[in-house]
Length: 315
Length: 311
Image 1 (tube, each protein chain N blue to C red):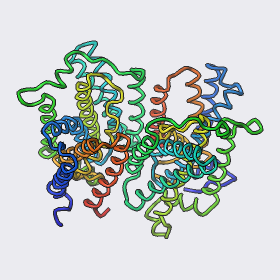
Image 2 (image 1 turned 90 degrees about the vertical axis):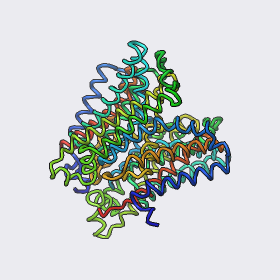
Image 3 (image 1 turned 30 degrees about the horizontal axis):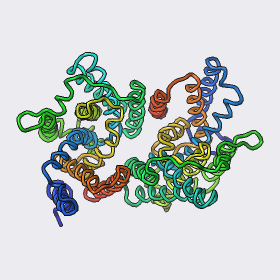
Image 4 (image 1 turned 180 degrees about the vertical axis):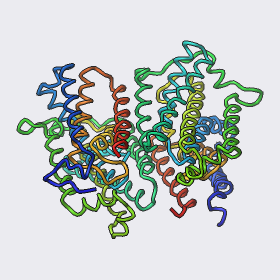
């Protein structure tokens, strides 16, 4: 279990060889190009990039959690509740306070997840499942089930705008990747996270504050969910309590496809990026082929299971 | 305070909690304990008894099944459609078969492909939900004529559904506490390596547990379909949480290997009474979601506290 170095981004030491994954993605892109030439238009690719940015950001957070051996099923509902809080606060106090309050919501709820998992010792899957319901209930209660509308048009710039031809969400995602990669690969925090995932007992005996790192991972996940939520809400110029429903599956699938092991200790940011790209292309290709979003649910679920099976086979 | 420990909790402690809760509720809303409301609670809790029992089998064997809600939606839809096409009995059979198939898939993945139960049932949740929505395009389906008999008829003073549910529950209780299969299931969940070394076919036992969960969820879905008189892909939403919660608060140790179905029954009564009581007080369904989440976590915490084993 090594640490990904700058020199060797796809080192086989730290994650399963992502070479095959690249081929799969290229193959898929080629396939879709043949079936749907529209796929390669600049508009389409920009759209895909814009849409995938949110998943990318959320998946970064999920990676942190998965690396310490946990899981975060609540990210979808966190997006919903953050969307509601951000937009309501925006209407009352302005963009900046709204933005800050939204991020804080993610941090606080992520912290609650972390506390429940670390200190109450409740299994992560169940703890975050409960948070899923709690946050969903909270979001729906705050707005009575209705979306938050009549937001100022300037709010939409974040999600819909571009700078130098690149969609702003993609820039935000790139920045997020950079920071997360740096933390995981270059700083002792990252090393400790991989250590905990590798063996929790050994790490504890070595003096690593395991509980605090798990808290940290969940706070990061909450923060990322909040960030993604702001971008998504901006893009729709709407505050929606059910926003982001289902993204937990996609983020877990992206992380696993990208080489992470669900028991922790394995997985990288570059791998996760590839996983996100894979899912984004798959989703976009299916969309262009007029496959219903319900069927896509089936596909994502199957991809998730298949990715884990493959991961197990490779030992 | 010995009665608060482990097994005695589900036999003494929890029923006490339920009684206290009932008394408190009655002082807030006198009609909480009225016969018609109690009947409501019984009716509401019926499907949950089935799903929680199935969940208990899986948890005792050392796993977890969060796909139950989506399986219920799928079964409801399939039972409705098959019933309309080929008759009531065929509808029910197809529904149960579909539930068993989903459960079997979960079981195969967990037992032989070594995929963690968490992930398989998470994937199945997505797959089943997608399938039920795809089949119906998001709408509800009509059911064949016989269904409402099933849902509302009585045999003498007892509702048909209640009798069937109680019968199934008793069979499961017997299977778990009186048969070798049951004993081995507990062993598998308690310490899988030790079980395997002592010759127990852990793969098969876990497979059966998941299949039972699927089958029982299917039965619950059919009960609900009969009651609502329509096939709905959203049947069973929320049941993943309440089934685990009821099982756990009823004393099934979340890490497997311990607990009794009798406790599950009390757990179901607790959760149903809680939900009913909150509704009577006037909390919206959204607020109830939040409260259920919190109660769920508390129940889990209690469960871990009472059963803590040296690991």
